[in-house]
Length: 426
Image 1: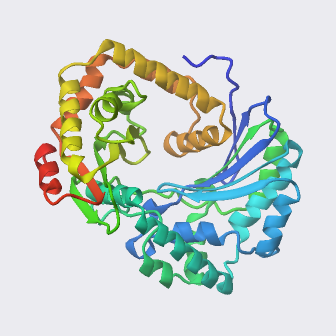
Image 2: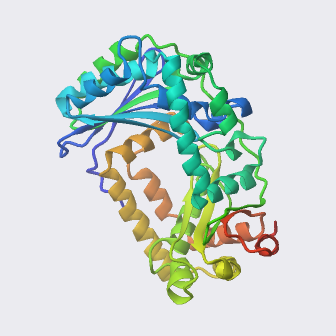
Image 3: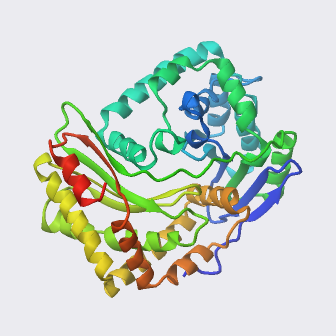
């Protein structure tokens, strides 16, 4: 159980609907600030796919008052580090530095989020940078396998089945006006969260945020329909690849459905740690892979129970066959010792997350976007600890009775697609 002495975050809401989260971590010597915007590849049309990622890149290329060199210098002269990332369900901008500079950090990130001008000449240069990033994406069997897996999960009609990075044609086509229009539509106060973690001066954080974001248009919540699960096998053979990258998985309940807790525990039971059945059988006893993993990737809209690994082409069929056997084994019986191990591993992982400012802030943003409130640090873990063995067993039974999604990339054997289809009812 997470101890009750964990500092409780404070939540403030501005008149325009923007929310502020202060997460006290007084033992830290630096403060972390993130601004989360509820927009990502899930919120894009097919013709927009990739625009959230381009906006994130271009936001640092100049604002109404600063050019890109000044943006970097203003942060770095304070010793701060500034960064950003784009995900399927959100875009986030980050800065970390000395606690006394927190109001300045709020103003700097607000300038990037609210006043970027997306200069046309910078867009042409950055377009080339993103094309290089896209080339790296296309040449990595792991990225390709996960991309194919998402397509197998949700098809190509829903944005959940499309990659965050987008596609080359869109990257080449986006204009400055496209970026400005997207930001005006998506970057609104009710879809924005300002979070700080560390030795936070709460009053200073609220005052600085009010000053920088108080006149941001409220907007309407950026919502997306729930994707329909498809399932099936997608593959792409890559020349020069010596291994077969395999990603397979099943639909899982979303964050708002407490049923996802059994999936989290099932994933830890099956594949967290070297003593877990997945790693023990696949790697240690059978030598079928060096890297193999299992996770329940829980998101607000739709979740996935995922197993992935890389293996020699000649061992790929044995890999997917053994995974299927382990799923059947757990559908028939749940080992008490293994379940206790999984509970303890999740507890320690949750405690570690309380010590990580980036993780704390992202979880807070996800909870606010999903539930409209912050949950107590131990609330989620307490409910997870109450999950019974029979509930975990039903997760495996549900998966075996459903249609799996499989992504295969790299050196894929000729009949592996058919074998996967036969094993996983796809």
